[in-house]
Length: 284
Length: 195
Image 1 (cartoon, rainbow over the protein chains, first blue to last red):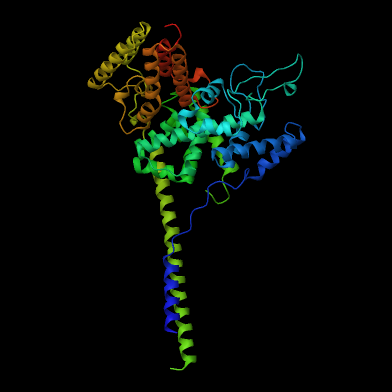
Image 2: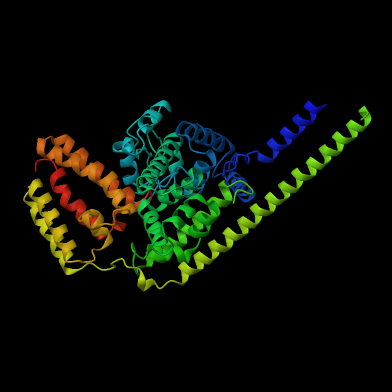
């Protein structure tokens, strides 16, 4: 009896001292989280812009690429949906500007083809494991007077669904790795899930905008405050969705020009949409 | 003490222990929720304090000084002559000169031309050290060894690093900062075939 009582006391003590459970991932198990995105997909299907077959193929490419690069699936899904509404042929006939699924310019493609291993040493291997033909190009063939959706698109073309997804995921992974390396070397603490949010912002506007944003916060709030921002998703979204904050930070980049406010607005909307699409309920 | 009495005592003890455990869990919940509330309040205070801060107090130079402009134009002239070593020595000398004169160098010029003037703990310094510096070293080596193809590849990689840093996936070259454009123009002289 005495033994039984001791056992009970010990197990209760253990219960009291038990460590808190591990925090679940910030992202939903599968994107999109908010139903409005599903409604939009239905709309795209009814208008013939994105058939059920196209969507299925695309989602399979996204899952494969996300898994190979170890990126949370909702991060890739929501980024690509936000960039082009999954229109892999968007602006295919343009010779300048952003095109296709991940809204790449020739500059972004140049990084994937010529410098991708610099940011994340395993990227070339991962692309090879996905059987990605390299270099990825903007190549397509269009017969006279035919619509862009009738274009013949080679496997290595960025306008090919799988190549577009792989190139965009690799570019995103590069931004994540670049920011990670910069923060590590600067001794700034961060949470890996939160870092994906900043990688999305850097994909959209370059790592320099994140540097300027953090520089501004560091100047006014100190190093501990910056670490606090980089570890707190709620605070991160508050800042990345606040046009005034963004505009103040972008002053050093696009001082006084229209772009300062325009880009602050763009990024703020982008981040609102990303939060709704990718973050699990109760995550923030 | 009979067995029944002993069992009753144990049951009572267990009930008391569960009550203690429950009280602790309740307190812990209260503590963590009040901690979260306090953190939120302090975050909001900090954000509003930063929002109210005077933009003019931000110490970053928003305009390029005459000294910087002249220094960069001198570097451009040296690059046209195709002398890598002289260019690097002169760049270093000019950086020291700007530092000694306590001239507040524009942040973009600090990154691309005068990294010595950057805050040692800043992220821009890290960008220079980890991304630009290795790119410049690769270009310098290719130029010194006269490897035509490698020169072009090294320059392309350097250009791509500047573009992705400033533009992201969708930005256009016209959005590059003036400093980045001048930097690329200067170093293209060493990346072009046949120089």
